[in-house]
Image 1 (cartoon, protein in one colour):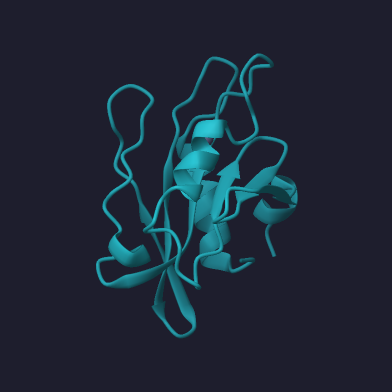
Image 2 (cartoon, helix red, strand yellow):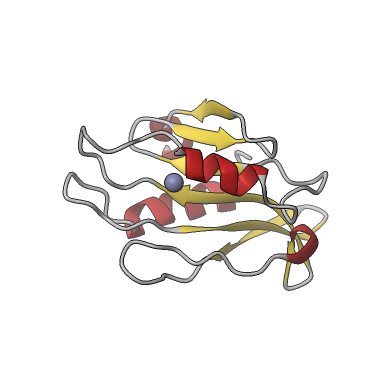
Length: 137
Ligand SMILES: [Zn+2]
Protein backbone atom coordinates (compact mmCIF):
# COMPACT_ATOMS: atom_id res chain seq x y z
CA UNK A 1 0.00 0.00 0.00
CA UNK A 2 3.00 2.30 -0.09
CA UNK A 3 1.71 3.86 -3.23
CA UNK A 4 2.03 7.62 -3.50
CA UNK A 5 -1.64 8.38 -4.09
CA UNK A 6 -2.70 6.29 -1.10
CA UNK A 7 -0.05 7.81 1.12
CA UNK A 8 -1.09 11.29 0.05
CA UNK A 9 -4.79 10.49 0.64
CA UNK A 10 -4.12 9.16 4.13
CA UNK A 11 -2.04 12.20 4.97
CA UNK A 12 -4.76 14.52 3.65
CA UNK A 13 -7.42 12.72 5.68
CA UNK A 14 -5.26 13.04 8.79
CA UNK A 15 -4.79 16.78 8.21
CA UNK A 16 -8.47 17.29 7.44
CA UNK A 17 -9.41 15.66 10.72
CA UNK A 18 -7.60 18.46 12.59
CA UNK A 19 -5.86 16.22 15.14
CA UNK A 20 -5.44 17.60 18.63
CA UNK A 21 -6.14 17.03 22.30
CA UNK A 22 -9.51 18.76 22.07
CA UNK A 23 -11.03 16.47 19.53
CA UNK A 24 -10.68 16.89 15.83
CA UNK A 25 -13.18 15.05 13.69
CA UNK A 26 -12.95 11.63 12.13
CA UNK A 27 -12.41 11.39 8.40
CA UNK A 28 -12.41 8.27 6.29
CA UNK A 29 -12.69 6.76 2.87
CA UNK A 30 -12.23 3.87 0.50
CA UNK A 31 -9.19 3.05 -1.61
CA UNK A 32 -10.43 1.75 -4.95
CA UNK A 33 -8.83 0.04 -7.91
CA UNK A 34 -9.54 2.10 -11.01
CA UNK A 35 -7.39 0.10 -13.40
CA UNK A 36 -4.84 -2.70 -13.23
CA UNK A 37 -2.12 -0.41 -11.91
CA UNK A 38 -3.98 2.60 -10.63
CA UNK A 39 -5.62 3.23 -7.26
CA UNK A 40 -7.81 6.11 -6.28
CA UNK A 41 -9.53 7.31 -3.11
CA UNK A 42 -13.18 8.02 -2.38
CA UNK A 43 -13.67 10.02 0.80
CA UNK A 44 -16.69 9.37 2.99
CA UNK A 45 -19.16 12.21 3.58
CA UNK A 46 -19.26 13.82 6.99
CA UNK A 47 -22.20 13.10 9.25
CA UNK A 48 -23.60 14.90 12.23
CA UNK A 49 -21.21 15.76 15.07
CA UNK A 50 -18.25 13.42 15.01
CA UNK A 51 -19.77 10.69 12.88
CA UNK A 52 -18.71 9.65 9.43
CA UNK A 53 -21.14 8.13 6.98
CA UNK A 54 -19.91 5.04 5.20
CA UNK A 55 -21.60 4.99 1.80
CA UNK A 56 -23.15 1.77 0.45
CA UNK A 57 -20.51 -0.56 -1.01
CA UNK A 58 -22.30 -3.64 -2.39
CA UNK A 59 -20.04 -6.62 -2.98
CA UNK A 60 -17.01 -4.62 -1.85
CA UNK A 61 -17.39 -2.14 -4.70
CA UNK A 62 -18.34 1.50 -5.01
CA UNK A 63 -19.34 3.11 -8.29
CA UNK A 64 -18.49 -0.19 -9.96
CA UNK A 65 -14.87 -0.09 -8.73
CA UNK A 66 -13.32 -2.70 -6.46
CA UNK A 67 -12.53 -1.54 -2.93
CA UNK A 68 -9.04 -2.65 -1.87
CA UNK A 69 -8.93 -0.90 1.51
CA UNK A 70 -10.76 1.52 3.74
CA UNK A 71 -9.45 3.96 6.32
CA UNK A 72 -10.47 6.36 9.04
CA UNK A 73 -8.68 8.67 11.43
CA UNK A 74 -8.54 8.82 15.22
CA UNK A 75 -7.69 12.49 15.53
CA UNK A 76 -8.22 12.96 19.27
CA UNK A 77 -4.71 12.75 20.69
CA UNK A 78 -5.75 13.27 24.34
CA UNK A 79 -4.49 10.64 26.76
CA UNK A 80 -7.96 9.53 27.85
CA UNK A 81 -9.04 8.88 24.28
CA UNK A 82 -8.63 5.48 22.67
CA UNK A 83 -5.96 5.62 19.98
CA UNK A 84 -6.24 2.06 18.78
CA UNK A 85 -9.23 0.67 16.87
CA UNK A 86 -12.30 0.31 19.10
CA UNK A 87 -14.37 -2.83 19.47
CA UNK A 88 -16.98 -1.07 17.34
CA UNK A 89 -14.36 -0.41 14.66
CA UNK A 90 -13.32 -4.07 14.61
CA UNK A 91 -16.88 -5.33 14.58
CA UNK A 92 -17.81 -2.96 11.76
CA UNK A 93 -15.13 -4.49 9.53
CA UNK A 94 -15.55 -8.10 10.64
CA UNK A 95 -19.33 -8.11 10.39
CA UNK A 96 -19.62 -6.30 7.08
CA UNK A 97 -20.42 -8.86 4.36
CA UNK A 98 -19.60 -6.19 1.78
CA UNK A 99 -15.97 -5.99 2.97
CA UNK A 100 -15.05 -9.57 2.20
CA UNK A 101 -13.67 -9.64 -1.33
CA UNK A 102 -10.28 -11.24 -2.01
CA UNK A 103 -8.90 -7.83 -3.00
CA UNK A 104 -9.80 -6.15 0.29
CA UNK A 105 -6.87 -5.86 2.72
CA UNK A 106 -8.73 -4.21 5.60
CA UNK A 107 -9.31 -0.85 7.23
CA UNK A 108 -6.44 1.45 8.16
CA UNK A 109 -6.95 3.43 11.35
CA UNK A 110 -4.68 6.46 11.38
CA UNK A 111 -3.63 7.69 14.81
CA UNK A 112 -0.77 9.97 15.81
CA UNK A 113 1.73 7.29 16.79
CA UNK A 114 0.74 4.36 14.65
CA UNK A 115 -1.29 3.33 11.67
CA UNK A 116 -3.26 0.22 12.50
CA UNK A 117 -4.80 -2.25 10.10
CA UNK A 118 -8.04 -4.03 10.94
CA UNK A 119 -8.02 -7.16 8.83
CA UNK A 120 -11.27 -8.45 7.30
CA UNK A 121 -11.57 -11.02 10.11
CA UNK A 122 -11.37 -8.27 12.76
CA UNK A 123 -7.75 -8.69 13.91
CA UNK A 124 -5.62 -5.58 14.50
CA UNK A 125 -2.01 -5.10 13.45
CA UNK A 126 0.35 -2.14 13.61
CA UNK A 127 1.42 -1.56 10.05
CA UNK A 128 3.30 1.67 9.93
CA UNK A 129 4.76 4.57 11.75
CA UNK A 130 2.93 7.58 10.31
CA UNK A 131 6.20 9.48 10.14
CA UNK A 132 7.48 6.86 7.73
CA UNK A 133 4.29 6.53 5.76
CA UNK A 134 3.86 10.25 5.37
CA UNK A 135 7.50 11.06 4.66
CA UNK A 136 8.23 12.45 1.24
CA UNK A 137 9.80 9.84 -1.04
ZN1 LIG B 1 -12.43 4.33 14.91
